[in-house]
Image (cartoon, rainbow, N blue to C red; front, side, top):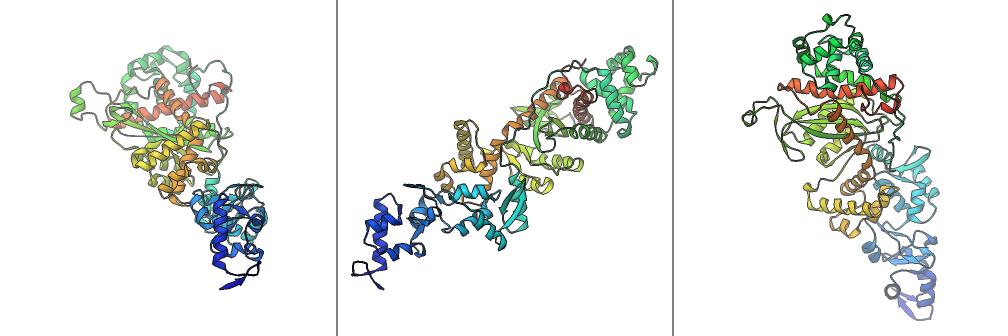
Length: 531
């Protein structure tokens, strides 16, 4: 089709198109409409209608003043579809979805944690309140109120719920309180009395006072005969356990039988009860949990016993090298650093396989309404675990990337690590970090906005932003081993080993509860001043 040019000559639209493309190539691939009018013979009416052409985009900001070819925007845009070249007025913003409405709807649908008006303003370089509000009024996106702000998310309820859950962990969180001043000492007889007050309603398999004596034994590492002698000699222990005379103290054999009969599930009930009392008074309790595992060696006298598999429930496994024994898995409340759930598996059990029973036990015992995320190391990195956590706890599982899963994930993990090192871990949101990842790397691996792969990388970035919370579980394992003898197993029957493991956690939390009840907050997190 021929059209009348401003110079009076007949020219076709294709010629005008070629002229504009040539001008853009010669001027950094972006130009204002004013520059096109002044620098070409293309008529003003054609330049005004560039947005309707199938070859060009106009900018989302600056009142659509800037022009770029679709080909260039498509090749130079970041993984989320934006290209932001510098222009005379600052930054021109283009997006592969072309229009403001289509771009905002795309972002609300594909961003893992939705879109707020301030975020949209920053992304598009213009005010977006009215177009977002109009999309919501037309039911093209859903508007949800969260923490005094409106979040625009997917219109499907299942996608919407996932996005709103993700929103909870978009900001780096510091919930670790300063260590308060020490408050003197904790006393063992007070600890025994504290645990006994819980045990009387939870322990049915043995007399509660014998269970309290076994908790005391965890701190001492005594044999059962030595425990008997300690209780007989110490008046304050006997008084706490309600033994009137030394002769009332059970002998070593009776104490061993009590240990053999004690049910780990009853101990877990005690743990739940004590943790519940402690968590109720903590401002940030229940917001983040950390899952991790450690190994403990089996009690075996000879190499032959190990090679013949004579120790019930023990097996060869790998954790910081090879070992023969068991794996202990914890759920730790990140804010209070309390071991709220504990399980034991054979040494060869994979971390991923142990995840579901641990989470199920935690979910059955504690409310998860305030839970924002579960954190774990690369050993728990699997899509099945993430889906199970979301379904069971209604929160995301943020794990480090397991580089053994694929070479591309290893490269992404290394790039994220380097990026956080360069920025000294200072990112205000995961989107900020995602924007700074090498875009060529993302496109090489076919990572598109809103895809499973982007969500995976997004989760890995968020894990990095919250990684400091994971240090708490290592401190808990250290306290369990240092103070309550977690790794000092003196039993071979699998059920007795489990009893020992859960008793270690119970003893540690009993010390914390004692510190709370006796108004010594500086001693709640560690029994280092127990006498």
